[in-house]
Image (cartoon, rainbow, N blue to C red):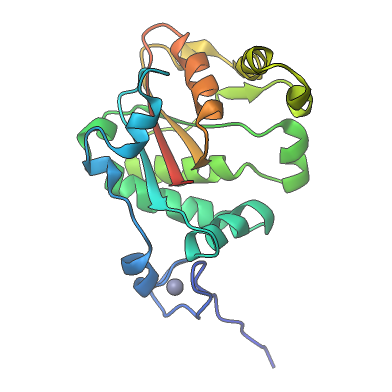
Length: 219
Ligand SMILES: [Zn+2]
């Protein structure tokens, strides 16, 4: 006899009904969405004002500790459930392609993990989101950014040096695939924004590029 385990909703852990995929219908309606992609000068865009020029920026969900969104991100990052990234990415893409500021993006690029961490985890959660976004927006995705260095020594340095250090952590693999493109830079969660800024700076060094940012949540 076969025991069939039902697939569970990534957000509420209840069994999915047929036709539901990864996240149940109830959660799709009730998860705390921001709808920032429809709002000009939204809270995420304001975070980057005066720090880096962006076309648009959004975070898909509000994030609060102990709530469903935090659990989903935890499963995506630490529990091997990379499908959550692809599915949420697809959902984000369906909405972003209806938004003027994002619809013209031509390439999706995830924030890279350090190679050590990626080989330990087996995947980059931001690349999973990028894959989903690429699928539903109908534009390619590329792991065009690389992460060079360990950043663990940062805490011992002065503030200015620390900033310099972050800047040199990221690099571009092949600038020819980025030239003259509007790039959608993707990460799982925005906290201080400094990682995204360092990545966007690298991308903006390539001639003719524009950058927008989309994350799954913000803290
Ligand atoms: Zn659910």
